[in-house]
Image (cartoon, rainbow, N blue to C red; front, top):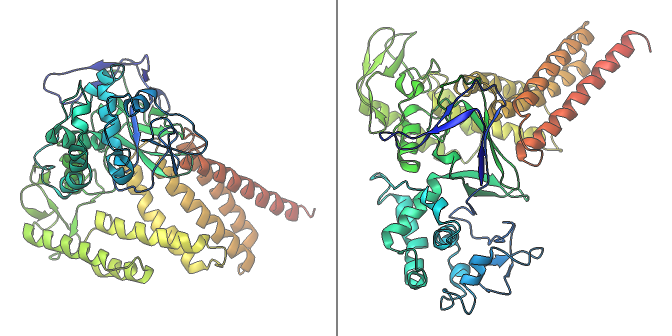
Length: 496
């Protein structure tokens, strides 16, 4: 199921919630640390379209043998233990054949129960030992699982079919949480996203500035690479949260999804490594930024909000109210470009330009601009292209700080920047307003060549059949386009 690099070792500590992976020799960026196949692949809880139990593509037929699990037209069988369990002579023979069809949300938990019952996989399941914390119990997600997963399973009588596993209300909720806590997003060959449970990789300790990067191909094979140089004796870290969120938001997500409190360098720094992603603009002076200087308690930074320049303070309730106002305003934008731009103008004077709420707004604007510019019916204008470039230039340094080294997010950002940079360069050259237009165009093409090379470098380990791997092919097309333009310029210069 998994294999580790010879340059790492597993270390278990009594006072540490998960096992640590420690480098025994220097690891260079790109070195493979771990390869792993998933214990389980399942649709997202809210998915209503049945998936083939063998390949996880859309399914519209059932297995002819067990008449319980869905298959696609290309797959004729699936896991033999699961199939036999629900056959007429199996332990689950009395369970309604429509249980899964009518309650498809149970798929992941049911598969995990079968893995636990199966003698060949029970030991692997035992490694998923995490239990939900108090913050998870009675949450909205907890209530949804109660209605759509726990109750249908208990009412089906399936508990009596399992001999090795004692199926209880508490266990089913725990399994829901364990699936989420140990899952990575994976993509099937048709592009639909799923959840893959990886026992080893998901147990690596978290750091909001990780030293690794994860890739997963369409066969769900996971590889963990070193994203930066890792020296002998260093702990291997993964990240399980959105790096473009503020500290309180990351902490909240980690408590709900992993049941952990993070004390990494970024979380411990009120300035978030100088990014100011949680800082507000001081309303008392022109140069200061208001930050919360207290320690982190229960996933939130406690203490007063104080200006780093003039020392003016801001009430915590006022900060919370401001964040609530922005959140409500975001819900009312209806994903309209002008509405997002208006929000950016309105709140730009209250938050640091790198604050996570402004970053979210900028990301939404960039996404809308991308859709407009990629529309074949659209003739890209200079103003839209320049706005897209401006947003990328504001966001990319943030990504570089929180995700140093090899980073797929930074690679994607560079690719987005490259597309608009090339479009604008060609547009301006076609206008030929300047007498030295050819020279300017050449300089821009040479710069674009460097951008493309950097983007490709960031994505070089992505599987060719993954969404990011497809970007590598597109970057190669842009590189060809750049070289063709440079060749044409040289030909004109030489009078060819």
